[in-house]
Image 1 (cartoon, one colour):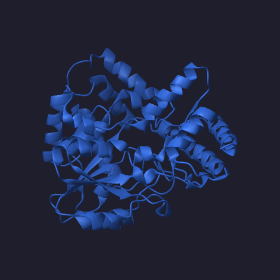
Image 2 (cartoon, helix red, strand yellow; image 1 turned 120 degrees about the vertical axis):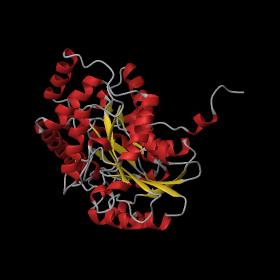
Image 3 (cartoon, one colour; image 1 turned 120 degrees about the horizontal axis):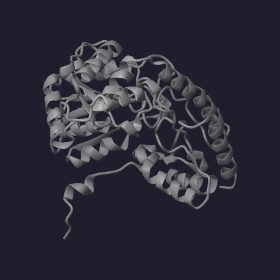
Length: 389
């Protein structure tokens, strides 16, 4: 007999933190490890944002605030989403959460009953499937194919729609591949679900500011889709605020009320002074964001060209986020074995593609949220180690 609820056996995890633990163990033994496993900007939070938090602390923003978020922050988010997505958003349609992950959790918890189907990208962020299974929904993986630059084929979604379909999860720019969805993709998906009142789209757009070619496209901006879409966004990636833990969802008002109730029952509210810093992040200067994206673009060229010079590895150029997802099938070993080999033999921490689903076999993920110097060193180490494989 166990004290644990049966549902805990359905809850997954993130391999990035497991690989990080292994890497840290090697570092404690005196090994030097280049960390390309964690999806976190290596830049500092902009000074004006930090100063806003300090100011708010001194002014007494240390108490409870509304569960959905401070009105001024929700107004700032509504204004930002209205301008960036081209749809009219009210503050009542915004819910602020401790990080963006709770929007995934709460949206699935609020909308999906046992047995209902949820489509999600595979390879994709592992928390999608984890939460679908946790609530006893039925996960329906949508394969991302390298020949399509890891863009979801909208026809795959249309073909998999059933009377049990409840939610479709989209992610663009995409983790782990760096792929981006185009307007034409989203229009086909919108056409397939627009007449289905019982189907909602969860659009994960946390990397929306980190786009290198073209513009970010949101399905919420397509006519008739705003009220059928939950936009997931946050501050962690855009403003290098991963440790601050603040994200948000934008959704129709009746759903926002349900998500707010889940906030009341779990977290009460997001830290008040951090919310004040969020206002400054959105309304203050955006120079730091531009510099960060420009540097990521420079690093992308370094790691893209470097990986393609290694025998047995081929790599697509990502259009967004800060990940590459190279094809390693010609090396003749499984991606999990390869990832362990690169960590122990080359001192380079990467993630196996299967960390993101079964369709990730034959690939590995590398984050280029590291210095150009370290990226070049990682490529050199990988190349040397793989010669002896």
